[in-house]
Length: 411
Image: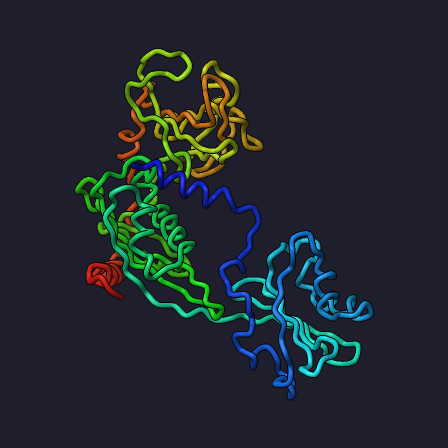
């Protein structure tokens, strides 16, 4: 049940190597000719849209679009916001010239869906540049669904009419981030669980759609309802709190990997190498080799090295006396050693298959008072800190309004 969501989310996360924010935008940048051409005879300009081909230099593209050898250095000097060596293939470019022909008068580089760089010829040999920020139109949307298979699939189905596929994946990630201190999305969801989320949808001038802030959300897990509300605490800082006014963040994360599938759960299983049935004191998270492993809470590294069937192992003692273990690692993050103080969510190592492991995965254990405990049970007691009394009235007012909108089913 939970395997599909984690595989899908892992593929989304691991398939991106370089940011290419323009991929969701239409090829044409000609969304507002008045903004692109400001000189008096701009109406006589004709535009040609192009993209940088794989392996092609920016100079080669401009050359085949009519920029002369003599003008090229001046154009590149004006486009100082661009590093020619770091411009990836696929970036849209629009070249404008007189409709009757002639050398280019303006070149528009789309640096992002909402960011254009205009390079204009203002004299026979003079080029200048300016940046333009395109507006995003924001509205609020409510989406709800039943989780029959997994959270990702439920959101993919429920939000299909209001979000493109990439934005639906983004919404699933963001929702899981909010609840990651309360529930392990990879293993604790059950058929019949449900969600409801109120969020901002932003549509850019190019037509690209993205997810803004989640304003309120509700998860019903095994019959237990948890609601989260975004509260603006002032000074540009906002955080999520449950309906009792406690922070959704807590002392411990529920999982050492972000949204990865689990190959086995706490309990009896047949060990894949030893070939015997024994109690497996922990949880295995199957993930691609090299996936970052994060510490579930603040603490001090007490061991980082090789230990028997664990292979490369990190052991961390937390302030509450709880000890967490991370085994089969490919390697350790820079600076990780015994005595190192680490903070919650910090990358401490990378998934591998050292020790008694047949494939890449993370073996995760918790020890309470020296005894191995089921992580799902031991971490459930972790709770966030409550809001200050001075902020409670403002929070209650904001929570009432947001939850009313969430429950109505439309924004």
